[in-house]
Length: 203
Image 1 (cartoon, rainbow, N blue to C red):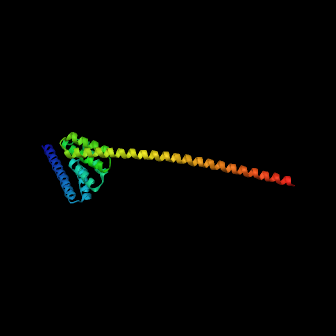
Image 2 (spheres, rainbow, N blue to C red):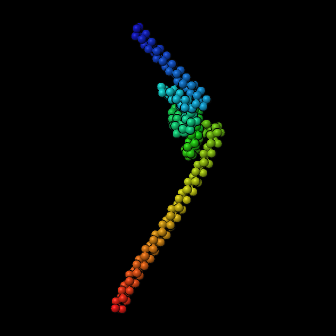
Image 3 (tube, rainbow, N blue to C red):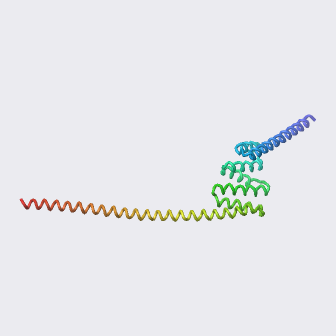
């Protein structure tokens, strides 16, 4: 009987601790939400991180990603949303995480990756019109980026060809100058020899 009482007491104690921990996590998330709404994104990040220390919570992770995004820390924001989509979370949460991941990637000008994120969002939530709009915008930016890259490549190639042409002309000019100098030196030697001969004949 004593053993049973000890087991019951230990179980009850664990349940109370677990409940208190869950309450603490929720309180930290609520505190983070208040900080976020007030524009105190750094404080919100601290609260959300604290709530994640003991137990993973996709809501805290999601809010942490949002807070990083508002701070302009797009890389950390991307990591948060990538972590969510790689976990077993409800489909609607996964769709929203893909949408926000797309936004963070757009902010980093990673248009191809953003395109994929929006596409995954639409697969999970076909009615998301914002994701459809952003998908098309990402496609347009991706094409624009590719065209700019092609123009840069062509311009670089043209510059290299012009440089090669300039280098060839410079080398040709250097060779011509060297030949000219050599001819002048040879003519000077001939002239000095001729003068010496002429002088000797006069004597």
